[in-house]
Amino acid sequence: QVQVVESGGGLVQAGGSLRLSCVVSGRSFSAYTMGWFRQAPGKEREFVTEIKSDGKTNYYVDSVKGRFTISRANAKNTAYLQMNSLKPEDTAVYYCAAKTRAGIAPYDYWGQGTQVTVSS
Image (tube, rainbow, N blue to C red; front, side, top):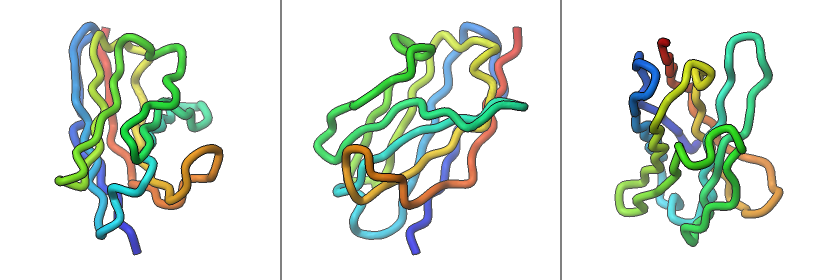
């Protein structure tokens, strides 16, 4: 079993910043593609961004481009999502996920989510 644990969510005012962390158990973290998703109240889960095992970022959803940055620290088994210039519409539960294959392969392991609330 691979465990994925997010942290760093909370309440922030519009224009502020948060950094989410995602710690993954096991010895294979450096080989995983890591992704961040979010689900706002009453809406479907949305793919936000991902980073491959080689450090290349494949995608940012248009609504977060220029504001969010994904990164990873393989020595710490940790992925990050830096969120700047936050907007009320960024309010959602944010989920971290990992997959063993790059490209269009589905994600294999999921965290429980961390709440991000942005007030106006």
